[in-house]
Image 1 (cartoon, rainbow, N blue to C red):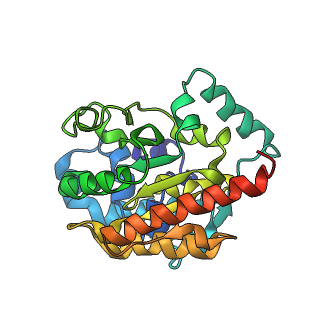
Image 2: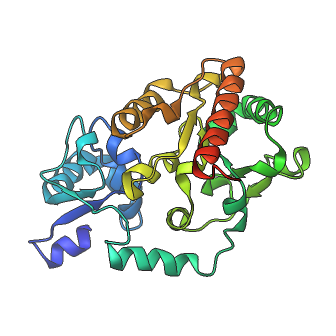
Length: 276
């Protein structure tokens, strides 16, 4: 960026949403940009000129493109521009995601109803809690109904041997544009479980779909709950049917939530197919 600025003094920077982190920062920091700059700057110059460079970078930010501008309680950008949701009406982006999905095997996501998302920090410090949650779920639903989506940072890491413990659960360790999956899935009937993965925000904010979501952050021994609580509270406001959102306090409540969702899914099937 510094090099480009030397060539073009009218350089402007636009930020494009890459996940929930953009919404839930209290203020924009230099560190959200430093991964792009560190390739060109020495460590010494970063330490010496960090405040100055941070100021110059922030002054050059023109706007941020985000899916839900209303979520910014403290807006650090000069201008927020809403990105259109990805629906068939948004033809170009919609077709690009369909093209991305073309060479992917999505069959496991289609036939399974429960998706457990391993967040970037959750399983590392709460592995035993994660196992307890999965075992609790399996006391009600079968392994064939559940899949586990590993966080991309763990895609080549087998420190979490879910496959050995639960051989019929599909564990997705692939690293790909995950959002492209959401286009073709009947997400309103799916159940997403996480302590706080941003992947559960995207169905509503990007695709305007409303799956069941169970936030398990209160079941974790070592999780910062404040941020996760904001995920839930913002989705609660955004959802048309916010009774599909759950935050169990303990494993017994978690088990009851699974029972409740199974009951609702069964009733919905009866209403949709009354003669079956």
